[in-house]
Each structure stands twice: as C-alpha cells, then as structure tokens.
Length: 306
Length: 319
Image (cartoon, rainbow over all chains, first blue to last red; front, side, top):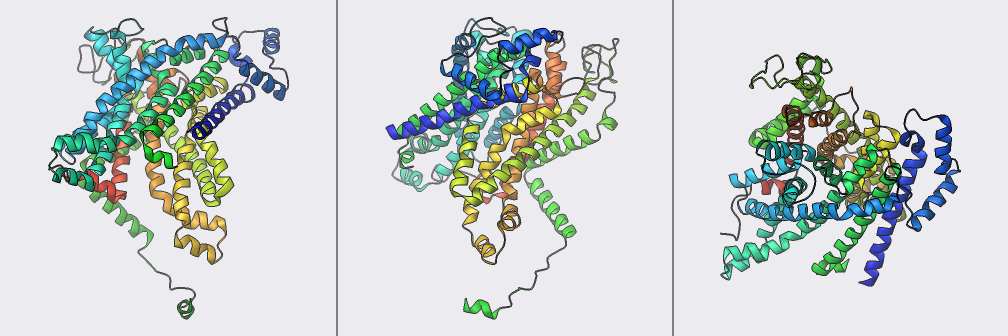
C-alpha cells in the first residue's frame, strides 16, 4: 500500500510539475504579459517599468528559476486586480467550488442510478429508448445555455428561485442541476451498459434459480458489480467539473468560486491571479485523483493485483 | 514451410468489385441499417442538415447576419405580438436577424469542429502509432506524457493560452487541439498493442516490409472504424467546447458569428427578450445531440456486441 501510494504521489507530482511548466511556457514564451495586462494606452516607459518589475527582461532560464523558486516557497505573486497575494484570493474561493461540484456530483449519482437501472431492466422497450434519448439529450445541452434557460424560466418567469449569487439553500438548486445533468446522462448510459452485461452472467441465473427475488438479485448482486465503471466515470466527472465546467457554470450563476475567479481574472487581464488559479486547481485535481485511486484499491480487490 | 514452397510466390490477385460499385454497396447497406434504427436515422438527418445549412448558408439565410438596423431592434419571433415573418425567429439588440445568425453560426461550429478533429486526430494518431509499434522505452515515455496531460485542467489552460495569444478562430483551433490529442493517442496505442501480435503483421515483417509500410499500409487501415467513431464523438465535444469558450468571450470574436457568442450577446437582454438566448443554444443542443446519436449508431452497427445490447429484449435471469 505504501509503495503504491508513493508511486501515485510521484505521478501526481509529475502532473503538477507539467502544469507549472505549461503555464510558464504559455505566459512567458508564447505570449507577452505586458501586452495582455497593461491598458492599450500605456506609454513605452510604463511598459518598460512593468517588465522590469515582473522580471520579464531577464533571460528565460533566470525567469524560470525565479518562478519555480517562488512557487516552491508558496509565493504565487501579487494579484494585480486585488493588490494582495494571489494565493490568498484563490484559497478563499475553494470552499464554494467544492460545495457546488460535490453537491452536483451527488445529485448526478442520485439521478443516474435509478435511470440506468430502469433502462437496463427494460432494455429494448420504449422506457429504455426514452431513457437513452434523455440521457443523450442531457449530455448534449451546453451547460451555459441550460443555466440561462433555467434562470429565465424558474428565476424570472415563475419567480421561484434566485437567479444568481449565494445565500440560502435555494441559491444552490439551479447551479447544482446544471453541474449534474451532463454527468448524470453519461453515468446512466454507462450503468445501463454494464448492467445489461452483468444480468447475462451465470451468477445472476444461479441466484434466481435458488429462489432469490428478482428485486434482490438485481438490486444487490448485479448492481454491485455493475457500479464499478460508474464509480470510475464518477471520479472522472468530478475532476472535469472541478477543472473546467466550474468556469462556465459559476460564470452563469455568478457563483463566487474558483471558476468565476478565473473568469474575473481573465476580464481584469490579471495573469498572475489566473496562473495561481490554474496551479491550485491542478494540485486539487491531483489530490482527488490519488484519493480516488486509494479508495478504489480498498473497495475493489482486483485492482490490487496490478 | 514445405507446402508453401509448392505454391506460387505471388498469389493471383483477387479482383473485387470496383471502387464505385463498392461505395454504392456501402451506401445502400448504411441506408438499410439507418432505416431499421430510426434513432440513427435522426442523427444522420441532423448531421446532413448541418452540412447542408453550413455549405449553403448564403442561399438559405433570409438576411445578412451582420446587417444592423435600429428600426427592427429586439423583435420577437413571428408567432408573438409584434413579430413578423420576414424575421421568423426575431431580431437581436442590434436589429440583426436571429435565424440568419443561427444559419451562419453553423459554419463556425463545423469549421472549428472539423479542424480540431483533424489536427488533434492526426497528431494523436501518429503518437499512438509510434508508441504502439515501438513499444518498450518509447512507449512508456510517450504514454507518461499522455497520462500527465490528461490530468491537466484542460479548459483553464486553454483559457490561459487564449488570453495570452489572443482569441480568434485559428487560436481556438490551436488551443483545443493541444487539449484533445491525447484520447486518440491512447486509443491507437491500445489497439496497436493487440494488432502487433496478429499474424498478418508478423507476415508483413517477415517478407521484409519496412516499419513505415507495416504501420501505415497494414495496421492503420484496421484502426479506421474505432478512429472514426472517436472522431465523431470528439467533434460533438469540440462544438460544445468552442461554444463555451465563445460564451466566455475567449473564443470567436465579433464580427464573426458563433452560437456561443450569440448566447453571450443575448444574456444582457435575456429577461426582456428570451429568444436571443434560446435559439442559438437550441441550435447547439440539436447539433450535438444529432452528432452523438450518429456516433452511438455507428458504434452499434460496427460492433455486434453493442448491437446485441441495443436490441436486447427482456432480461435473462431477471424473469
């Protein structure tokens, strides 16, 4: 177990290192931060001064080493927009994003398990076809559009729910539904497929033959085995929501998490802050990845063989 | 080996039906399969419709998508009060015809989708072929790079790249390709590992084919079907990604048109004029749904196991 954990942590470290290097290449070698961050009417003197201040006139290897040394000390630079250390701004936003992403995924699991189960049991019949169609629809609708349409309908027309921001539990409903829907569609499809495979297995027939009820055979015996790919996909969905979709969903609902912060940093041309968001998200994703693998190994003995 | 010597070294070449007839036969078979599965037919129709509308946009669109007019600002769709049939889906805040903008927007989705699938697909396939054929050290290094990049926060890095180099159609294609090549590399490499063991590859090597010929002439054609399905699925994902980037303001820039861009324009007026947001978003959803239906249908007709699941009736042992 310790060896496995060390190996996974090493891989995770590589990912974080890769992201750091990618961010450095993108911000210092491909583009010119002075052009992005300064207003269009900045004078040449202001530009030179700005470049000096950020050390952009140093040779690239020197820039890289000071950048890496800063990161190693936990110094992500000062946010130009907020005028304080970027890392603090980023860390404040983490709980809100976690609330949204974990809540959304819990909802996705609650939706997808019954849907996938019903579709698999009724395979080939119209209930199944309808479920498959709606699952595909769920994963085809762009999240920003779904969010806006829900705001128009439930927020403005019916006036049942608040349209943006945070506060009461009512503020959470719409963003969580938007995070959950595409994931629920994909998870229901996977569960349907793996459940159909499981129901063909001889052990299902045996269990039925020895007199267990249909409900028990499907609900306990088959479902447990069919859930393995769903868990894998669920972890993947969680990571994707955290590392990407949160930007879109949080922007639509003005939800003050990491994704909305990334959008604000982009709008304020604050590359220092954006870079800090990207790196913190990379670390979070890596930690979740390792945690999922550890849990997986504990739950499914087969993975210990590899 | 004794028997082989007796046979002529060059077997008589099998002459099958010509390419034209083969294509015709293929199309007829596809049409029959599509008719049997109405969902697949729907996907085929949507994708066909998208292609037609995108190519014939100037002929189908009733107005110039960029023509502004103050007199026709924020007109509702024709079935509501104040609507007019000359602007069937209404107009936006600058008086531009929404239907025409949706029609021209299809070009952007198609262009970006196809370009990214081709660029990322070609690069990923090459890496996958190289890793899968070479094996050993090369394989483990390449796959380590793939694994590392798969764990990247892709959308955030794409946004960072676009913020730094400036957003336009070309840079969106570059940013999304950088994000998307890994899936092809993984798929191709996995399939190559199993193909590597097959007899015909061994045979090709034994008769002295160079690696390049073995890879491209003998192995690559056998990967075409899974690659096609993956390409279509990725096409759907790319359309959504482009729409998302354009919605955030870091994708397609005005005066070019894009469905995601139109949704973000409409956002400021969404409580007064819902149609600005509704129609471009509907276009994205229908397109992506059609492409997804097509991909799942293609997988079904190409894979007997999937076909079994599609038409499975009743549950064995579930009684």
